Length: 640
Figure (cartoon, rainbow, N blue to C red):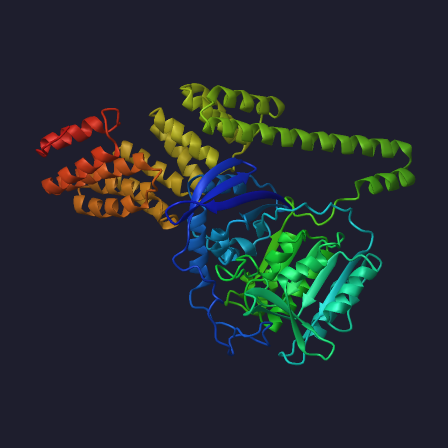
């Protein structure tokens, strides 16, 4: 698998919401994120019992049966995160994937310097679920979800893939804790790498103690550290901790912060596996450091990749995950795909309880690679085996690949520059940047689509139409280009052509709420309110938080002669508009006045018109004339 990154950076904002910045292969965007009404993962509150097989790898916190279905939480979380520009970019990126070996890494990025962001670390991001298909992103190799904490320290230098991968396994099973199947997990590790002894060496510590682990790390370089045992939160320090073994066999808690300090100097260490409960959890708002979970401490301490558990995990699930995860790594899978296969193994072991979402993957590197490829070594070997001519051809091939990658990166940079300049209102500069991108790659759909947006803002709809048609030809399976083409055709009153494009957009991506909205608007323009209603209702089934869908469904109800129904839809729409969407809120308020007038509620209609005037003052409002005429008909006084 080869992954492209879809990065969502979440930052504080006003009004109880969060700002979301998106960086993706199809461009950049902005959005908002509202904390879920029910943000606890299914395993948050628990009772031990027969619902889980085997012992749990946690202390002081019993295992759970779910209070809220994982499916409902995942769909609500998806709708809250993927809205407006974020949703459009996600659909565009997903549609651009070619072949079964391409994937889109969903990277949730949080700044640990902002304590107010700590509650986001506790959200079950691994449950993200597309509402229209009920597909969990994490259960597909094509859409893994990873977590990223912006550790403000130098990155460990990338090292070439070692000729022999060395794994240090620390199995801690203190006598004063419940026993674990560490022997079985050890057997699974050995079987996963069986037959690869020349390329992989696994070192098992005789006792899971801190001193033994430190001495082993000092004795020789290791690339992977695997801990199997118990995890917990230390009540005195308010920090996440692992439980090691003392010399007398009794458990010894060791906080994640101190473990990060212990591992900091071992630069060869690329991956830490924490097969213990609650190791991915953050403490939340308690204690002096709200990001003091074990995994987050290791990531901020510089470890490039950490796999940890965000809640309790049964012994059977832990063993199943570990066995499959290492088998896939041994088979050559990237870490994201190996974690996905580990989740599926848990699902097979414990079907239906959401335990597969417990593992969490933290990455520091932008591309998810643990090691750099040994390209130069491959070239030397080719030269020795095949002679100078073959080696020279390989050099040319590598150079051509490097040039292609450089061109791709330059096209992406110029496209992102164009998007940024457009947002700043520097339209001519944005046009030049996007044209430069197309000089390098004339068929780049993202550059074509964004250049069309620039041309539309500059008033050249014909040029925009040419670019959008080219974007559709370049990427016929990307819904966003059909959506944008349909929008422009509708703007030019070429409604039948617009219908064709918008229908294709929702055919490619059945969850495309914005496309359903524009499809319904075109039906309204063609005086086909029943079909418009179906389009708006389909959009709301995928995104009930999209205010304009409620507003336009009200317009369809008005066209069908149902003003009271329209009032209900408009009253549902108004609270959904953000403070930045004043124009949309003003338009919905105008339609509320129209609906109340149609229902014979003149006084209420006048009150809504006064509210409209406050939201959209002045004669330049697109609806100012219609509002003034309605006020006159309803005998609203006084009226500007």
